[in-house]
Length: 535
Length: 63
Image: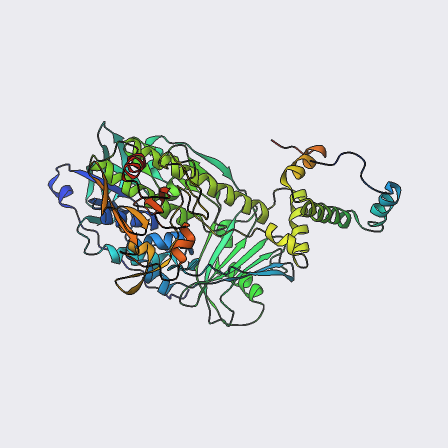
């Protein structure tokens, strides 16, 4: 098989604590150095939390695996300093085509909204994503990334978790005030704490293959239902970086995974799909079965679950990594405030409240796409086929076609951290919603709103700021004035936030709206700040 | 509100048209057409409450 990517090997280094045999207590131990664990490490560093990352391997993701990254995770990675590099290497697409049997059913253009720094999504192989985050962690004094460290058992004390870790030098013990479990869908830690992980298994198998070709195809997403080259199943073609194309074939439940993974089985399938004799090389392939399920509680004592360890979704709609990154975004600032004694433990329970709500929304979307793509009965297949046939000539049927919906953040509408609106606002920026970006000017230079709001709590006010900060205990919210600190030269910020003179927002460290008013009232802001930290 | 009182002008004529529209179709073709018909009419109705009442009225198993 061809190789467009050289997998780095990271050196195993025996830790001082293992060498000395003395047990150390760490603030945070992150288990798993996949996209979610690495994001957690970067966010801990950004928030000033010392963290140790343990990974049982010594390289990045083998194969492209997660491919599609949406705007909100890209904004989070931008906050953490590696979003630009991902966007530069990634491939963006807007046009999607849906084929049914031998015909184009319809095509769509995502027409991403203008005036956002980050694109609606990019396609990028997971190994690049992980490599860029590992690069960003180099020189980070707060994060200790340890390869070939496998957690083999865990038990909990009142104020810490005790981990037994195996390395090439044997077994040793670590203590952690908090463990962030990012060890994936087959999470070992989940079993160690006795968590339930329930939901729906889908009796279907999929082949995913990375194929290298110099294709003249446009950069579009092509999805086939029941194509002549792969009858009764679905197929997907996606472009990634470096002329690597990702192809997914639905195989059905009866398929033999070991057999289907063989190049002599895959190559004729790909050849039939491409329909001509253009040269291609197979780079990587895998066969998988998936489930839609989530953990019953995102926190078990001192162990907090994030990413696939907490929720597993179908791959349609690219919801796995995208939602996992948002878990971390939600968690890290809360962990920091609790570790520093600035917020009660109850703040960490809102991590479960908000992210379980988001996970359920994702699971619903994911299950719906799966039911459309792989109908579970003859009757539902007939409806599916009727929708696809109608879609060719009837605009009304096109919104019913579901080949996976683009992952969008779930607003934390029912969150106890929100201060409900007391006044009327137009637009999308209700409490619990992630802040929309907008072009702004700072110090005479073009910039972006999300880059202006910083790491802590922010008070955004349209017009002159009556104060420079609002404090609750030791938590300080910096005031950002539209007019003095930044200029809304295109008027997009005012339009998106329904900003009139005096309109004031309290924004959380994870760039979500906590509260908003029509005037700047320091006492109200302070109360909302207290509420936003569960005080 | 789902209309449940008689509402079709010339019911015999409509019924004949419905049956005739599937004349000569195989079972599969007729079933596919029925599905399309449900979708076309559902879109015409649009209102989710009315659609839900119709699903119930037709014997659908709703929670």
